[in-house]
Length: 100
Image (cartoon, rainbow, N blue to C red; front, side):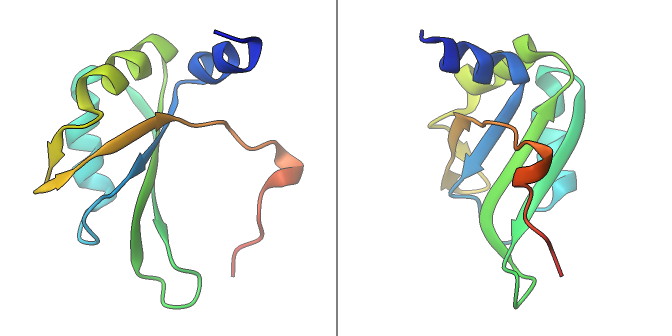
């Protein structure tokens, strides 16, 4: 892997796509905590409607746990949908978008 790929894997953050709009942070915590301790779970919502858009992030305390979760969950069925899981790059403080 390239240096950038290694850094992404070391962060322990996963980007989840193709989630049912009904998925909650609690659902994701229950599902992914079997791979290790989570420090953050975030379901993305539309800025205007505030409704879920089928995307989420999970952050594992240990990057090795994120790697296990990625291998075990990508391409699997979650709540009736095919889950797409990819390593996510953490935003730097200046890159964060303002909400509200």
